[in-house]
Image (cartoon, rainbow, N blue to C red; front, side):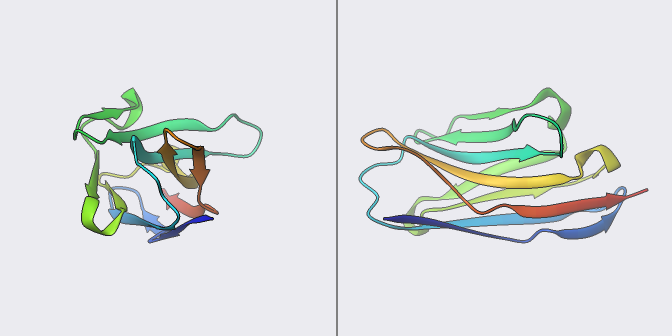
Length: 116
């Protein structure tokens, strides 16, 4: 069993910053990628940022230049540094892990609320 534990969400004013963390533990065979999605009520979950095992990153256009995804491979932990936050960034943020031998694992989600 694999567990992803997220932390770092909360309430922040527009223009502020937050840092999300996600620590993976358990029977992980291999990690192809880790990253973050977000979801607001009534909408589909959308990709925010991902980091592949070789270190390549990918971002949604809406967060490019403001968010940075990084990973500590030794700790199986992925981070999302969010700067210049906007009210439209308000969502539940979900961490995920792609194990090519098993499939995707998801965290429980952490709420990020940006006030105007």
